Length: 208
Length: 174
Image (cartoon, rainbow over all chains, first blue to last red; front, side, top):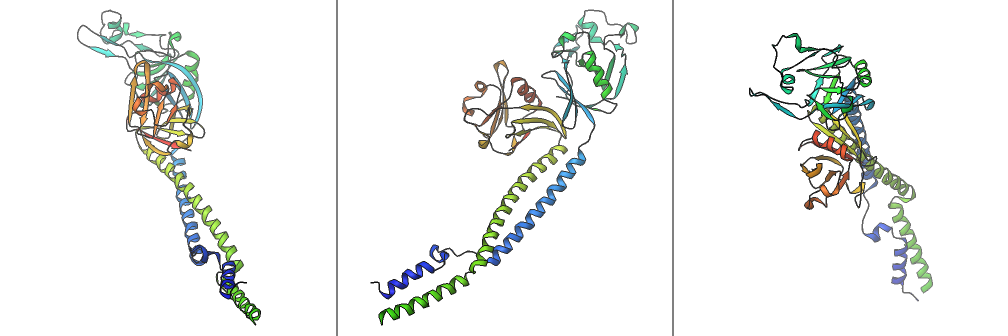
């Protein structure tokens, strides 16, 4: 038979609130309500800030098409937002150099960075630069010599990027996808037509 | 006499216990506490998600204003982008191989620590002790073999390799 004390102890064990046994008293319910309320406020604050940031980023985005030239893999892509509209094999700078006896030298590399289409030309004429004569061991003509004007070597179209660099056609279509140019970006005829008709003066061009 | 006293004691203790339980809040209060606890947990999880999202949005905002190219790597989709400001320059896919799972990769912003170029175009991009971008395992220097890595195709890695410089930022998303 249990003593009174033992009996009382068992009953207390059975009925005493569980937190008393574990020894950890929960926060008063009012404190819990307050914390939940402050968490809700924090969620609202974060949602509001994120919404503002998303809106700001959206405003910086635009629907303009742009060109990207990967000079490592020799690929040109026409893009709009996150979409790729067209991809073409292209040629970029050969990374070779030539030296002139007079001491001048040229290194043929495509320029890197952000450019803008400054002009669009149909049936472009190539004004043959000095290095082209040096490369072929030919005498360099005077600056205004009509011999420098060469037709039908840049394809039907050209996009001007500044400093003499262009996106244009080529006769050496078998070399597209390699580094073979003197710095310009070369394309095959069909791709060049697509690109020429898709961009306008002011279109951004990124070479990397 | 003794059993009568026991009954009295039991009755007193029962009343006392019920009183204490009622003082603890009773059934209604317990229900409210439970639902508040659940709400608290879900709000904390939501805050964590929103804070991560904010971190990425702030990264994008900073990069839109920066003049540097950067990478975004999505570990779940196993896709990456090379970007400049708001423009995508390149999309690529990558693989998580060997013991490395997406969960081991640190998420958030990483900074390109160094670029190494071994013979035969074996390029490696090293982001401290957090991540390596490679196309061939043998290209990774021995002392960096224990760093989590992802593998790109040779062509993609070469394009990315020459596009970024040490100090370039990458954001790893899950």
